[in-house]
Amino acid sequence: MTDDMTTRLAEITANLDNYIEARAREIAAPRIAAAEARAEQQVAELKDEHARTQQRSDDLEKELRRQIKALDGHMNQCPEVARKRTAWRGGRHV
Image (cartoon, rainbow, N blue to C red; front, side, top):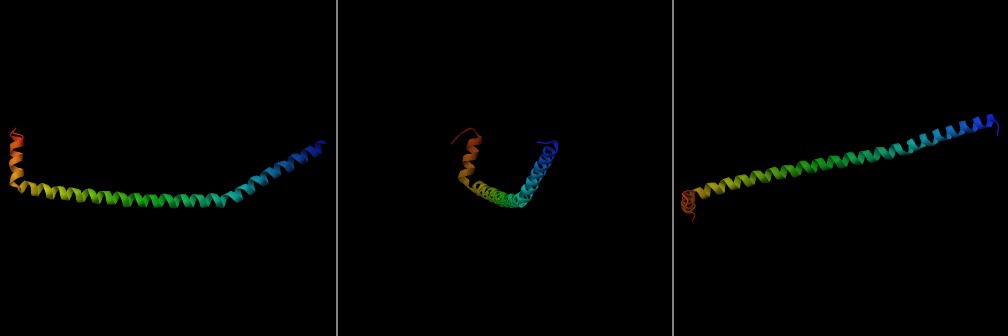
């Protein structure tokens, strides 16, 4: 092969490699964009779900504390509970 042919073949190969890479980017770009959009949507949905779950948890904790407070108030009014608490504090574990 002559130097001219070798040079021409190298140019064609380089151009072909560039063309293949450019086409690969063109083909991949919309697929990558779609995958990114799906991932962003999934992240947004998971964040929303987490926020709702956290709110439910906070609401349940608030309700439980309210019920415990009400029960504690009720138990403080109960004579039997008051007597047992007094006995417990006095060292007479009833």
